[in-house]
Each structure stands twice: as structure tokens, then as C-alpha cells.
Image (cartoon, rainbow over the protein chains, first blue to last red):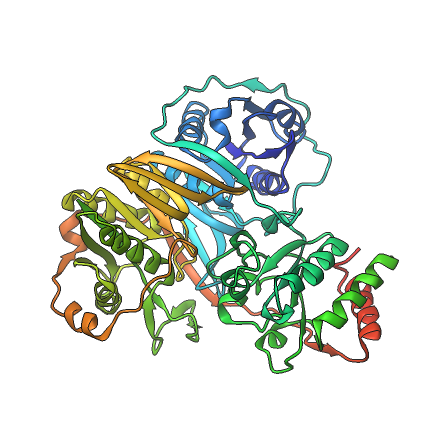
Length: 320
Length: 252
């Protein structure tokens, strides 16, 4: 059985979760295994109902303790995987997946295939692809382990299409042991700024030093992102200067994104930044300096002042 | 108390990476202490400078060349180091087993390490190490305070940030924003040469093997159109949007 550790927002499975559904169904078919999902936290019941369209069975519990990425979630997933005899657990490789997937793999004495962009069966085992060396190298990694936890890079695979075919399955409430945690979590703060989560965005508009100032960023990059329905990204220089929060940083020390479209505004293209976005499908660069390295990896380049070009772009986009 | 800082030696970010016969070639590449790990070294030093009585022990795994990264961490101010010498490429889970053994052997109560390693682009080591040790984890940490044996931290989540409180022993992964790592001064670089580095062979720590293997490594570059659009701002804007909609088809 393949178990999806699903996530939801307001009772709807996230885009990342629907990506896991695609991967799970493909693996389920080639391995002849059922696909099940577990969804946790407040709002889980509604999300479970939707996930039942794609899955053979969906477990859910609304327990708030399982809403984070801590010990209670690790232990609940381990218990469920054990009781239901799962051979694979799938998670998104976001912060939650980065915290939980390695711990699950260690606890269940399995292999970890981390941050994969593609995965297939290979003989009795699995073969996956992932990026290494600051996303400059594509690695093929294999395992023959009986049990594996797979974390999938957000945005790397297409989400499952809207209507599923697995038929409706009544969600069951898993009886999961409540675990004590030594950790107290409090004062959660939701990152301000982008309405579209960076890792899930189909389009990312990012700004660098070339936008001139925090005000320049807010008056150019943000409205362009809004006009494109895009997530907002920033370079390290911009974050270091205090113009933008770290949550928006794309690059070696920030997020790695591979959207359909990446628009780099006033970004020169240092290696550290490129490593976070060089897998984007289409790259647009807008920069004053025609020698900037970003132009070497772009699909469409505009040499010029962002403060003149971006407002025109917004105008064209708003005209429809 | 003892603080263990797990470090990694990685290729310089500007290094040209090549692949030959399905394997990355690191010949002629210069190596550095992973920038992500510098935050861990710095944080340990700040705890000591803030009055905590502690020994700061650097742990690293890898071939002989890793000594250079160890010396950098010692030159920043760490006291001693343990180098687990091996030419084997262990995956993150296997590395976690090895480091957990050494951490237990040394009796360290706080482990600091970078949130993500710049060679395999892996963020798994911290969480796997916490699990091996059975200790709580604070990952992607941006602030850390230690009062007695109580840690208060702030770390990043998918939604934003949250505060964590946990007792020692604990594993903390570090990132940009936690501090500004110091540069080693010349006198400290000289001093670092005399600091003790214990060498352990992997065999001494019992058998460890990875459940995954690297079957192939390749450099893949996407063919880019590389078209520079020209004209005045209004013309270029129109053309760009048109191209994105009708040629690249990435815009609705």
C-alpha cells in the first residue's frame, strides 16, 4: 500500500498533495498497490472527502496536535504505516516534509528518497531523479529497500486532474495514539506579503538590487506579481538589505523553485541565486546591464530600466 | 557542557561542476566549509561568549581533504574536532547514524548543523540525526536562546514562523538570519593549526551502509531561447506579453 501524507488548506487538498496523488497513482499501477491517504488537523474531514475521489481509502483525524511537523505527526504516520502495512509513504518536500520524512524513514528503518522530481519502479525497487550541487546536476538514485519514504519536490510533477476515478470511499477515523511532545509550539506567524505560496506558484516574479530600494520593490515587483497571479521572490542581496523577508528568498540559502515562468526583475544572476531558479521552464530577465549573467540563462531578455518596463508590462497585462 | 557542530565540506559555489561517465568530477574544484554550517559554528561561539561554559566540538565526515573545512571551523573559534575519515559516499540517513554515535560518545547535549547541504542539496541530515538520537528538533532556526537547559527558538514553517521551546538535549539546524558568521582572523588561523583533531575510521564505528545508491549523475542544461527583445518600453512590454502567451504559452 502506498500512503500519501496529505496536506490541506481550508478543507481542500493542496496543489502539492495533488502532485503526490499523481505520483502515487502511477506507482500504484506499476507496483499493483492500493493508494491511500491520511489527512490531519482541523478541516481534515472535508479534505478527506475530496481525496476519496482519487484514493482507495482515506484516513483522517482533526486532532490539532497533528497539525504541525513535530513528533505527534511523525508518530501518527509511523503508527498508521505500520498498522496498514504501507511500503511507501509520500510527502511534499516542503518544510513539513523536510522535517518529517527523514524521521519517518529512520523510525521505520526504510530508505529516504528526498526531494525527487520524478520516480518510477525499477525491478523490485525504485529509481528517482533529483537535483544536486545547487541544482546544477541531475542525480539518479535507486533503492531496493522494502520500505521507503519519498519526498517530492513541490511543482516538479503535474497535479492529478480534477476528477478522480477511484470512486468514493468513506473516510475512516484512524485511532491514533496521542503522543507527548517535549516541544512547545506557540506564536505562529503567517508570513506577510505574497498571496501565492512561493513553492506552489506556477509563476514567480522576483526582484533584485536593480529595483533600487524597498519602495522600488513594492511598487514594481509586487504589482507585476499581482497582475500575473504570481508568487513573489527576492535575491539574497535584497533580503540582506532588509527590503524583503527571508521567506521570499530564492537561491542556495532560500527556496528552490521551478515554476512555469520565472520573471527576474533587476537580478544580475549570481550562482547562488541561479541555483534556486535555473530549473524554471521559461525565464524572463529584465536588467539594465546587458552583461549580467542572468541573460545567459534567460529565454526572453529585456535590457533596460525596470522602473520603465515593469509599469508598461502591468498595463498590457491589465488590458487582457 | 559540550556543543557539537556538524559541518560539511562542499564545492565552492563558484566552482565549475562537470560530470563524466555518469559521475560528478570534482577534480580541480576548490572546496569550502558549507556556508550553511558557518551559522552553527557562529551560534556556538556566541553562546560561549554569552557566558555559557562549554566545549565546542566540530564533527565532519568525508575524505582527507575535509581537514581544510575543519580547520576553518577551528579558526572561527571551535575548540576541537573529530574527523570520521571515509571515501565512501553515505546518504543522509547513514551519515545520521554515524554522527549520532559520535555525539553520544562525546556526550554532547546540543547539536548544531546547517539546514541544507550544498553538495547533495539535502535537508535531511538534521531531522534524521534528531531521530537517531531521540532528541527534539528545531529546523530552519532563525533565533536561539538558552536559559539553563531550556531552549527558546524561532524557526521557519511552511506558513511563516513559530516559536519553539524545548529542553536540552536537542538538534538545531541553522540558516541565514540566525547570525552573521565571523571571518577567521590570522592569529586564530595559526592557533587552529594546533587544535586537536581526532581521526576516526568509519570501520571503528561499526558497519553503516546506505539504503540508496547513486546510479547516475549528469549535467542537464535546458536549451534557452536567449532572445533579447528591443524597442521602447511600451513596444517591448507588448511583445514580451505576446510571446509569453502565444509562443511559450506560460501566461493565460
